[in-house]
Image (cartoon, rainbow, N blue to C red; front, side):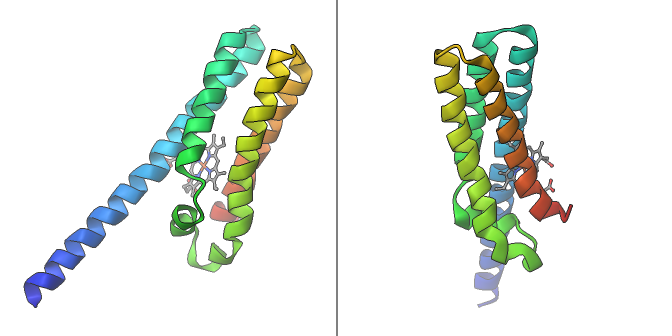
Length: 131
Ligand code: HEC
């Protein structure tokens, strides 16, 4: 019985720490992607904008499931999981809009999609951080 409890505690610790990794991995990839996109717009490099957008998309996929997101919301904010998940959904849509505009060489519209992405990051962070 005691052993079982210890095993359960170990399993819980492992699952919590690997969940931690998912969030950090996702955020790190998205941070890198956003910097790349910004650099791309500033230096007029379509390639950088494209590769950055792909990174943001990949990172966002890791952190868009409501079950995963809920784990990282403070107890008094867990009821806001839908708003948080909407922010992730918005990032996904923005990535599509950004790419379509790039293909059409509509760079201003592409840059606006990037701004909207940034706002979506802030939207979720404002919940988590009580901004
Ligand atoms: C659905 C919610 C959500 C969205 C959307 C979101 N984040 Fe986060 N982010 C979090 C959480 C939760 C944390 C961890 C708590 C904290 O840092 O306050 C975090 C932390 C971070 C951190 C600090 C990471 C660390 O290791 O401490 C960075 C950097 C970051 N996010 C970047 C981004 C970027 C860039 C975007 C948008 C492209 C984004 N996030 C969108 C929830 C989100």
